[in-house]
Length: 314
Image (cartoon, rainbow, N blue to C red; front, top):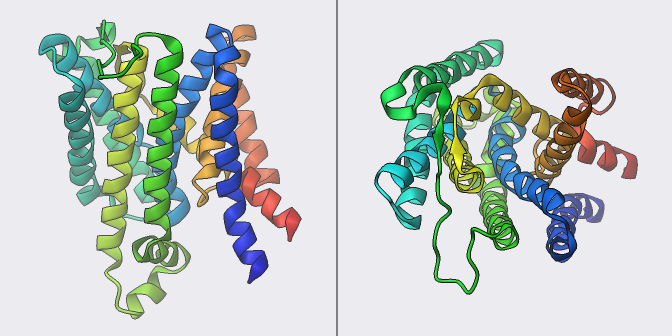
């Protein structure tokens, strides 16, 4: 029992240490590393949202960037064309992503295994096609530029890199806390049971379809939250934000860090962000490097880095 409790707490302690360490070193960092840390914080929210699907429910999705991107586009359009403020952009972005996930979930949850994976891929490509072709709304391949950062009643302006980093870090911590409460709740424990054996959970009287559907919608909502943060940070929204590569990178973040741990995917997000940015300096074929990393993880650490550490401890 003590060992199990210690194993459960270890990812939490590791995540807290990572957040505290990032907050402590940020003021002394040059602009480029600080930019990467901000990206990592936002991508951590996206990776943790997918972990609810993949790690806790056992549903691998190749269309998760759809919800990330729809929220980013909502912010881009509202902020540039309607001069919408912080609350309207945040609520609209998250609600649009959640509604998109609710619609797509009705289609995707009917399938399982490879079929679920392919349906999410197809749905994600639909969103990418809309972003690319609906030029009058999304500006097509040119994207939406000049998305302003929100103005909040704070002593510092979020237009500066350091205050925005702390803003993103607080948002990441809040998302992690909310998802952690969800994962440890009876609902989260039911998701784990479904991941292990849907047949057994049905026999016990659980509505498996409803739980999987709600997990799908919740994951989409939190992915939308990450998309809102990304639009504010990047100041630019384009079809790149909803493309397949973004979904694959998110899947790799979860697999690398350790599915079903939340902290693992967050750390995996940081690793992928830094790896991608450094490798892309030396080669245009950095996607091949990421592919090699994914293959290595599957072969040598199928439960991710945190899963491998747990196995070593035991």
